Image 1 (tube, rainbow, N blue to C red):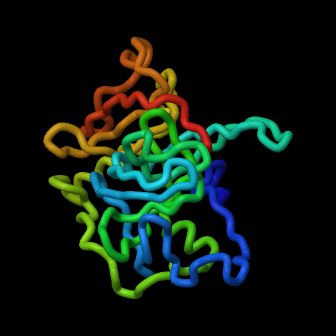
Image 2 (tube, rainbow, N blue to C red):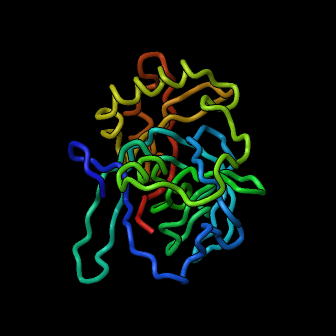
Length: 237
């Protein structure tokens, strides 16, 4: 995990490839050869992945700049623990990823030479969680294998119908009030999303929407609407 002031940016590892055991062009089963370029996630961006457990699945980016509490089990005789990650990408629906799919590469949903968007590692009954791929590549000082200059058009960085300034204002409000948002009963995270009319909102992720959570959650932060989002418990996959 890449630490940042008590939180982490990514859950990833690097391994040495056995010659002949991995396609040198970066071809992924059911997806094909990738673009060597990457794509920054945007709200409502169509994405797909090919995982060990669930195979090829499709979803859409539902949250950006997410802070999430991820639970890790006591496998391999270790102790259970929870880690907070920041700057994460959220994808719906939850069936986008299942246990054993951790490490799957999330790419834009185009037919030919898709660009990498994120690295999947956790999820719940409602969402999947991915590290932004550029954070992973930059940390390890590596680059994508694939076709240079290829990839789909993707979506705008501001998402459909949402201005870049509106999303920036939402992000600033989210960070400023992050501690208070995590103090909402049952909160497991918060993120930027799109509300009615494609307006930016701050989503408070909760295990369950309860009367206590509804009463404690602010209606808005610095003029940005706040919406409760029931996602369940987030665990590493």
